[in-house]
Image 1 (cartoon, rainbow, N blue to C red):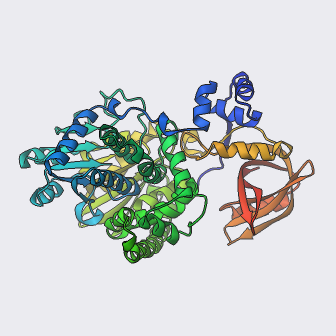
Image 2 (image 1 turned 180 degrees about the vertical axis):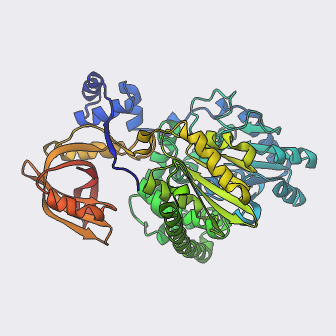
Image 3 (image 1 turned 90 degrees about the vertical axis):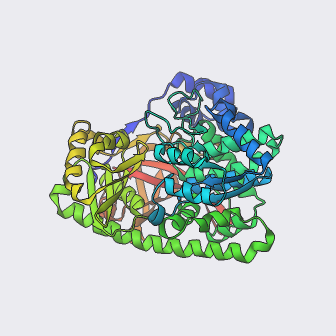
Length: 569
């Protein structure tokens, strides 16, 4: 199991924090958080606190954007058929939805294609282009895929297809040869924001098309959908990603919505609620993802594209299908996690290594990415989960901060049939007979780069905050920093000398509920997935050092602040 977490304090320029508190008229607590996040000038901090669509950069700053826009507008004018080629995760599905809808509104003859995980494999493939060409398509636009699709680009040229690639994954040294390649991670692209999700890149194309067509007032509706993909893809929530996520969440909460979105919100139990990043990550995204993981991603795509009120029954049916597939996904995931953990905990050749490489025959390829994430949480090791089918191992990789998984795979490239992705998440294929050789090779590479402290999880603290310093102003200002995620983590404070005055009590056999007291102030608290630590808390309940975040909860119409326990000692 993962070792106890190391508590680290984030560095802060205290003079900068004092200046921000004065110039922005915010509490010292929030001013300090802004300074910690590198927002060291009042103007940049103000833009962070109150983002607007005006803060989105000029999309024409992306390399090849002019060529992509020109070719699509020409296709629309000439009545040529366009296909949007997406991907089967939330990022790829939302990318497909916004670009297809934008093209339709501009008068295009447009269709879409999203590969099915088990039938078509990952990414932009020559076979898919052949199918689209046979259907009379003239222009194909990829979203959230294609940056390593040199073979597909070659086939497109042979077929006479004009291919436009939009993507955000890391490119090879040489780009695919096609009509346009729009990707901020292109080595020759000077665009300021390199961290867009795939749907963020698709949104920039939509933004450019709308601006060129005099339809910029359409943009907010597309931002709303883009926020779902941005938050689901766990990209840094700074710069344009923050604009998309924060404004999109506001619009998702406020409405109005098309019939498909209403059906999705209803099945997730979110109708009429204030939507936040938690709701996206744990309620909406899993349902959208379940379609691509367990059956066909077109279920989710058709649902989000549904706009005609006459489609109410169809939309509700599609939403129910997503619910069913998500339930099936959870069952598969729990089963594979249990099997993988047993292998890791009983086989020293696997469990003792710095990089966990675990494989199973016939494991459902739709859930191995989630399984890898769960194993990283449990063991705090970079993890690769492989599903073996007909002698081929299909893998999903998840990493820990500071370890570049994509570079690790590149070091093993001669052993792999294919691979790609990001530093923190990637995919691969290799011959099953070479799994042991691959496990050895990637661990030799990892052992040179991972020390004992790298394999201990760290809890980064944003500074001390006693219970006496928690008030309604601080709570209200903290909410303006949301949504939280990579690049803008949820603030975690610490304090000492806290007493437990009620509890701890087990909740669903996995969590702990209790109440803490400090300086005569009492707060309810919950500690997730920590039931095994109940004896320690019970024994030491009069002397607890607490690391916590603040959450606003509601019960029977009354709102109250609750502590989320991040760790204690």
